[in-house]
Image 1: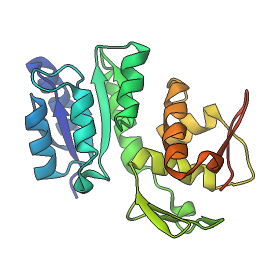
Image 2: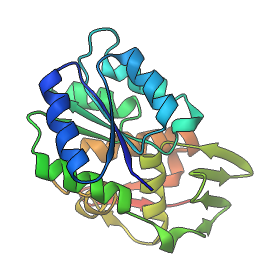
Image 3: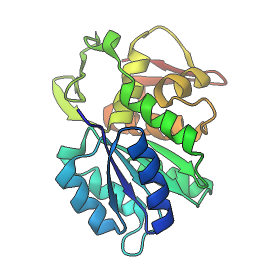
Length: 220
């Protein structure tokens, strides 16, 4: 099955560069130059990964991401921001909107291709039947059942919780989490913080414990 990527950017040169390189690697590429076009195309083709610029001519990328995350059909699609805006507040806003990663331009093409491949090939087969303290993970639906209530959450939040649940008594260091969930230990620590906060908001403060100066531990 062809892997599908949607590239959203209003700069023609960026679209051509990314399209050429992804097509060369065997991906089926779709493009959009506005936020509205991005939403329409995404719902039509259901891409595996959406590369989303923040500064678009009609709707900014943050709002586009929020709208995409409200579409159940796109629950399994990754959203990666590609933006010239590298400020911390812009990145945090991207993660809060449901983005799985935030990459600052100029893009290093080899790194981006490697990251894409790692995201799509990563699997959590060893975690498929994790059950602990009334928490059940459904790896096919990306759903979590806690105390009898089912929730379908964004893929990256699901993968983070799955990873922590793989060894409930272990304290995972931040570097381990960034390497095994995001595929890059150089990503900002804020990435983990934002996703942990979202999980706590949904499933209670006690589900994940912060071990100061070290990392995180799943508590159930």
